Length: 229
Image (cartoon, rainbow, N blue to C red; front, side, top):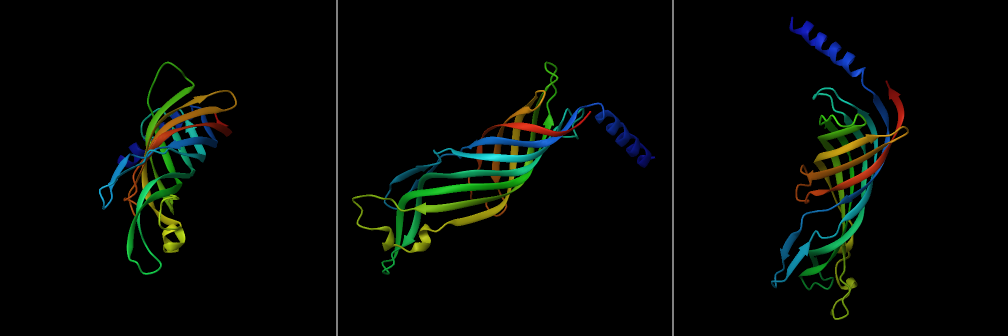
């Protein structure tokens, strides 16, 4: 009896979905990510603020979009890649002098880039004022890689040069792991394409939980390759 009810419910869901326009295609969006401000205190009591520099990037996705008539079916579905270009911010890091002078705390700069590959799902928020608009909220899971590169502070008054320190300090350092994403946004359909606007929060966790979360808007265009009517 339970099996028959499940099959009947599944058939009803498929029949209901067939009455809604469904689109498969690709999208490209510009991304602007921010991270929370953080405060570091050096050993000599100097206060360093980080997180003030926004990072620009691009997201490319394959999408399956439709007006979803009920909650279990997500209206916005995406699988794709997000690349955030390197941005420069203040940093505090430790290094060592090559002549055996011991550890050295340095206040300098750091470039950080991000690569994110994952799945995202958005569930439609019902509205009655426009049939071409899909407002959605949802979540995503992804593999995320951060690349950090320390930059030597070029200060005329400094008694040191970059060559005085171990070269490993200024080589790229990669951290990678899983992350969780929360999204809210809207898709507006035109005759040949759709506009997509979203705001997302990416929280690193497994393997890279020491990384601060990123958040920010994205705006792009969705091009349907195939429509199911």
